[in-house]
Image (cartoon, rainbow, N blue to C red):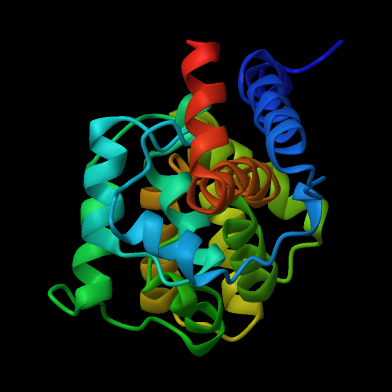
Amino acid sequence: MRSENNQLLELYPLSTMRKILDCIETTQNIRVDISRIPLDDKKTLDLFRNGDTGGVFGFDSPDMQEYSKQLKPDSFEELMILCALCGPARAFRPATSDLITEYIDRKRGECGYDGIHPDVEQIILPTYGMIIYQEQVTEILCKITGYPPENAEEVRRILAKRNPERISKLEPEFFCQCEAKGHDQQIAWQIWDLLFIYAKHAVCKTLVSIYTFVAYQFAYLKVHYKSEFCSAITCAK
C-alpha cells in the first residue's frame, strides 16, 4: 500500500515533469537527464532567491515565493530547510510560520541563540541552533544519554506526539541517563526543553530531500528551458 507521502508526489508533479521533458525533446531534440543535474546551479538557486517560483512544485504559493525571497537560500541544503519549515514536507506536520521566520532572523543575525553543550551544538549549528529534522532529535538523544538509535527514535516519537502521561514516564530515565553520562541537571533540563520545543515540528530529512529535489528539478527546467516549462505547466492546469 502506498503511503500518503508517495501519493502526493505521484498525483501531479512527476507527470507534469514528464510533459516538460517530452516537450524539450520535441522542440530542441535534447533528452535532459533530470536525475543528474548539478545541485549548485547558480541560475536555479537565483530563481529561488528571487522568489520566481511560480509553477515550481511546492514553492509556487505566494507565501513560499515571499519566504524564498526573504531567506535567499544559497545551497540545496538551505532549500531543504525552507521545504522542511513551510513547504510540501510540512503537509503531514503541524503548520506554523513562526519557525521559518525564526530561521530567517537567525540567519540574518537578528536573533541569536545560547549554546547548551558542545555535543548538541555540533548537531544544531548548521541549522542556526534550531532543530529542523527528526534525525537531529535522535542524534542528540544518542549523544547526550547514550541511548541506542532504536530507543532514541522511540523517545522522539513520544516527544513529537506530546502525550503527557508517556512523557512524564520518560523524564526520570532521561535525567538518569544524562547523569550517568556526566551531565549536570541544569544542562539536562536545557536539552530536554530544547527537544520538547522542537520535536513536535521536526520532519524526516530523507523525505524533505526527496521533495526538495523534485522542486529543484522543476526550478532547473524553468530557468534553462522556460518556453517548454511554461507550455507544459499551462497544459497541466
